Image 1 (tube, rainbow, N blue to C red):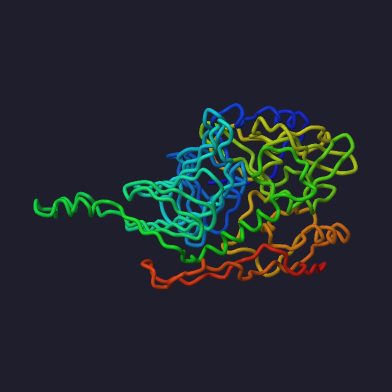
Image 2 (spheres, rainbow, N blue to C red):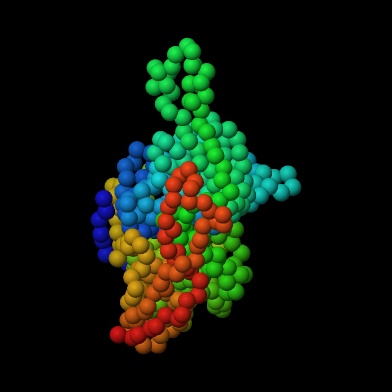
Amino acid sequence: MSIQISARKNSLGVSILLVALAIPASANSKARIVRLSDVQGTVQIERAPGDGFDQAFMNLPVIEGTKIKTGKDGRAEIEFEDGSALRLAPGSEISFASLSLGDEGQKLNTVDLLAGTVYADLHLKSAYEKKTGDQFQLNFSHESLTVQQSAHFRAELAGSAHATLAVFKGKVRATGPSGLFDLADKRSATISFAKDAAKNQEAATAADSSKNDAAQKDTFKIAKNYETEPADAWDHQQSDYHDRYATTTNSASLASPYAYGMSDLNYYGSFMMVPGYGSVWQPYLIGANWSPFLDGAWSFYPGMGYMWVSGYPWGWMPYNYGNWAFAQGFGWVWQPGNWNSWNAYPSVVNAPARTLMPTAPTTGHQTVMVGRGLALEPAYGAPDRLTISPGSAGFGVPRGSVNRLDRVAKTIDRTARPVTVSTVQPTTSFAPASGFAASSAMGERSAAPAMSAHPAPAAVARPR
């Protein structure tokens, strides 16, 4: 349930108040908060156990105990502090059993795959010297996957019958009733789950009890190839996007211990030096009257209260770390920093006296929308053509959908008129591993066309 409001309190005192509430980050607490970084189509979120499912939006915080599920037309991505990502294909559900820190500061991630298909693109910090490295564990049925180094893989749970694993890059280790095995890149495994033990026991006889005991164990089969799945192309498109925009020349000097949201900062805006403010970031497509608090929502989390959620696709780091500041002659800019605390409210300094600031609700648990609220993306990417308006700051522009967004922004700044652009169209860029045999035990599947995030012909900008 959500309600919409557009009124905002007009007070500099409010901006000072917004600085006050900060949740201790990794350095001071073993609790962690990660980001729901992409939402397409029907996606639902349960913020805490027993809280009930609500519609999910990009930039919602994800905490330990959160569940996320996608509908038949839904896809979602969750981004971790180090830039690692989990992606849910349509008809999938996961639960974050653990998001914590170990005694030596290592990140401990445990995720339960409850249904469907999940992709993991992990950039874990390995152990060095005497410290323990980051760990990722994926549980499904009676089995577990553990990863302690960078890896990219897919896990598909086919009800209570079997699961399939495919490793695109790196190595994972599976352990459970099926035994212990390592799965390297370009390999796959099929794990067949044992039938219900009670039913087996009823059918067992003294003569064949040993045979029945063997039948109750999960079994696995490793192949030197893997089959493509319909969502593989989307997963690789998202990985390409992050790889391309994770680091650019203008953000190389940003001394941040975190990587989540960095790709979006580099795609939707740019860093620059401003006298008196240092190295700051500013989104493209803003006008003289734009404020970073025009569009978003207040979302309630049990045990934490209301948190501000930005409606802009780049709206993660700039609202949870550092400060927003108003620089004369430049407008609103984000100053990176304050990495030891996670802001539930945006932190604001030097705000003009008449800045309109949203204020958190004092009662209730419903989501409260402000301005245009939180953006909804279509199920399967951007339309062929997209109209971008002055002052939109990228609101409603799907990530990677417009080639050279900076050039489009310059056109809009110059003309002060909406511009219609041709979006980046899908191209085939992903193929099954070499040696794929259609006669595998799981049956043949067709490969879906891939969507490439690599440079395409420049978007055609047409002022309206």
